[in-house]
Amino acid sequence: MLSLSGKPCLLVGGGSVAQRKARRLLQVGAKVTVVSPEVTEGLMALVRQGKITWKRRPYREGDLEGFFLVFAASDDPVVNRKVAKEAEALGILCNVVDCPECSSFLTPAVFEREGILVAITSGGKSPFLVRYIRKWLEANFPQGLREVLQVLERERQMLKGVGMPLQEKKRRYRELLRQWRKSWEEKSI
Image (tube, rainbow, N blue to C red; front, side, top):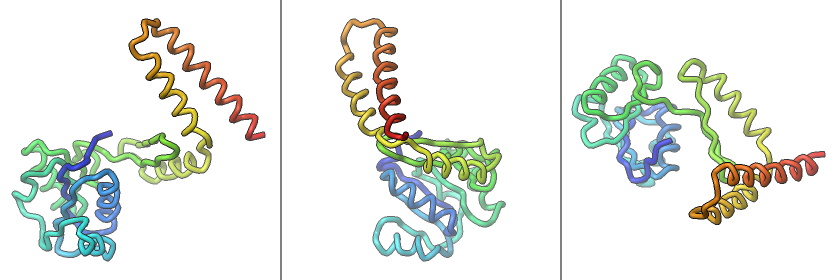
């Protein structure tokens, strides 16, 4: 989990993978630039809306200067590895979409529901399995977690600075969760 709000992020490539990455980066408040001779209609729409910057040309050495993070998402593995090499030399975080072992970070499959963010990864071994598990979790995710999250947050704030032993705090949290689970199970019947 990385805070990318306001951070300059680069996408090398303009295809559907770059489009998905751009949308996710925008959701978390990143400043997105794309370097690619061509882009999808979806990316072009984001350019027209002023949400991303597009440098309409192939990647070239030096393009990573000033960026916090880069996705190498071109359809050319040679270009992607050049991006990874430059990123490593500059100390920039890099994800090579077709080469997990070339990447300095991996992106998990993510979904957010009721204030809970769930991230799943196989370490690049099987994106298909990860998507399958994410979809299953989304379909089976319990309802009512926002309320229990708010209760636990209030309890945590109340207990901050109180000289209560950690084990007693944990017991109180477990009791609140037990009550929520019992209530949730009764609603599910």
